[in-house]
Amino acid sequence: MPSKASDRPFPERRRSIVPPTRWYSSFRQACLREPALRGNAAYWLQVEGSLTRHLQLRCQHGFHVEVAAEGFAVPASEEAATLDIPERQLAWIREVRLCGDNEPWVLARTIIPLHTLAGRGRRLRHLGRTPLGAWLFSHREWTRGPLQAGLCEPADGRQPWCARRSVFASGPRQLLVGEYFLPALLDQAP
Ligand SMILES: C=C(O[C@@H]1C=C(C(=O)O)C=C[C@H]1O)C(=O)O
Image 1 (cartoon, rainbow, N blue to C red):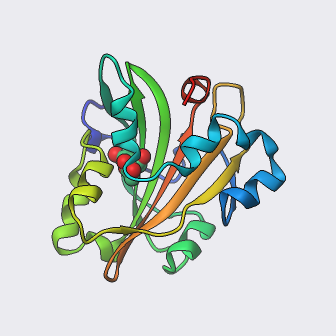
Image 2 (image 1 turned 60 degrees about the vertical axis):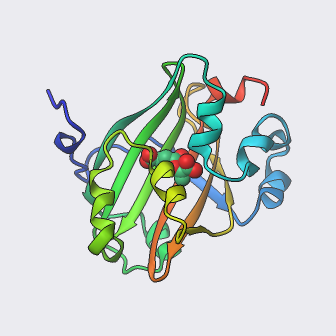
């Protein structure tokens, strides 16, 4: 049984933990398609700053990151296009569950292109259970691009139905972070 994050590779045949998602250029655009976004989801899809930090602040017993899979794999063509990297080029893909009070609240999928992993970016392959948000927001040179809103196709009522994502950039380096909100979080008052 794998015990460390590095023991959980990301072969292409491994299923992603996040559902298929259709992305919209803004929260408002997604609301035109799905008015239910104007409920509790509105807060989470638009909240600024580190999502990790916002989640930590609402935990009573503790916050942790559970690594579902990380390793080199080929991103979806639409993800490669969003990052402007060649289609079929390998990237470091990290999928985690952000857990509050021992319950998964958010699923996150991050695509880190090869050129971002060079030099100091090497560290990004060894985050393990350290939240990526803590790293990004403590390195001031990283800035976040506009937030897109996503409507998911959940396989069942326990999967996320909405998400958000954005590109973080530091000079020529960039990475794409998608955050998928689980009903366990959305059912709480924001
Ligand atoms: C971008 C952030 O980082 C969070 C932490 C992640 C991780 O550890 O892989 C992934 C996505 C985010 O939800 C944030 O906190 O805003």
